[in-house]
Length: 362
Ligand code: AMP
Ligand code: MG
Image (cartoon, rainbow, N blue to C red):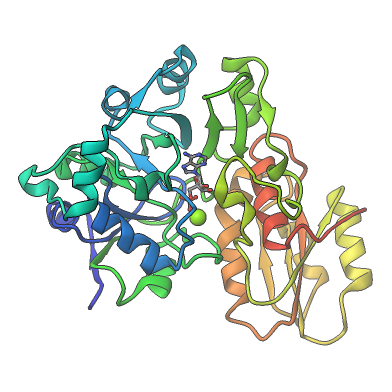
């Protein structure tokens, strides 16, 4: 299969692929997603094949506006409406109770392909989207092209990040093409992603609400609306044997370039000095550092993360920096990392996961 690159003027074609059961790379403000018709179990199962994604890792359902929540969720708490009001469209995913599906509906889904194009079959979320959980992740993305595609497709779009499972998430159409060429029908090029890390995931099915993944909407912003918010342990440390994080995806090795990563946390001056003192004299050590310190590491593969004080820039850069290291022969990667306030928590989380939580505090 040849993967088509589509642009602004080709959105009807992207929507047609989706309605016909195809897979389309969609630009969102967070990262590029790998979209399929979220009501078509055959189309959704192709996402898992294309990514090499474990079946027990559920997908997020993307909808055009908050009014669609009622179609697929039940017992929607007041907090969900307040969060949607404040942050949608935008980089926030809410975990809600999935609407009860009758045994007949689920059976019909199992027994044959539904074609949403002709509206044949029940209009319910198949198990393959939720990995059999009784909850579902819902998000309303902000990117204008993807909003238009969802509107034109007329169905909710199930989409995880558009990378091969385990690799850094794609923040440009070229990243996504590198992973998905030949495996999916099309990728819509909507330019580089404005946020650069995946959506914040908050679980609203228990009390207090729980942050499962930090992202573009910060913990502090959530607390302003919700009051107390618990931070899931999988955000800040490696899960032990037998521990089950609430977001199944958080247990897998993720975002990892080929070479092992060592994260050095602390004041920027101190972390730069630590890396300088420990980096090998061979070019086999790569460095990911804040712009101000780049000149200290001449003659080796180096990626700039952005200015030390600009965490938004770091969020936009982090996945590209990790991916760029795979195009070099490095055998080890040292990475400076910001403090965890604001969107820093998301940058720290992605770097720590890329490093398998190999973190040195200085
Ligand atoms: P990705 O789009 O690649 O970032 O993957 C979606 C993320 O959302 C994964 O980490 C999933 O584990 C998480 N997720 C999706 N649905 C649920 C759910 N119902 N409960 C908890 N986490 C979920
Ligand atoms: Mg992902």
